[in-house]
Image (tube, rainbow, N blue to C red; front, side):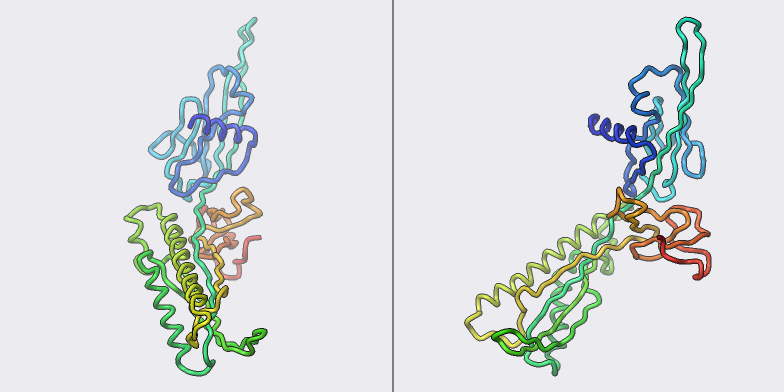
Length: 315
């Protein structure tokens, strides 16, 4: 563990001013108030002054831990703790011959941002053959399929949303013209009661993503079984409505919680993260982008107090 901390510290020394990302509700890495060169030297009468976001002097408390050697760690990191952390190291150099003392000051800056993992959902598409594009049986198949899929993942607090279908005529080489239902739907991990899976924990980011991955696997297995039934009965009489093999498609969709967004240009070292919206930006919904709002002065804003005319997407 000590070796791991040493490696992290070395990265901070080599890259002064580097942006640091701390997962919401986790502890920050240790910020060290000296550079790599000074860390290997003897320092006389060192003092450390840490200034946090909003230019407040930091002292040790139940959330901020500052050691006697100037190392700082923030516990249970939250959105408002994001921002600029500055440490000023003061120490003395003493000439051996004259005992003349000289005070030296060095300043180190760290930009620290809260982030959370994106919430996953899955856009899926399948196709079923049908006898005709006219008639009530297509609606019945569609409703039954949705019910089956909902039942398949309901214990994971996931559900099927935005289901739709269209009937098309498809010409297949050597098979002529057939009718197919093109079915699309989204699987979402926030079914009613989903917070019950968190057992009251404030840090509930990972549970919906864990559940939706299981839901995706179950649905993939369901359609794999449909394909197996198709092949097993290939030389027999197939029902008029059956799953079209290799038609199952799945794409992951990412969303960010309010107050967070993705910005690959601004946060290239955490491009896949939902990073807290910086001052001057906000995110009111589960979009993946923080929007500009000139009257926001905090990190993690979920609303903009100005009119819609001042809102535009962050570049």
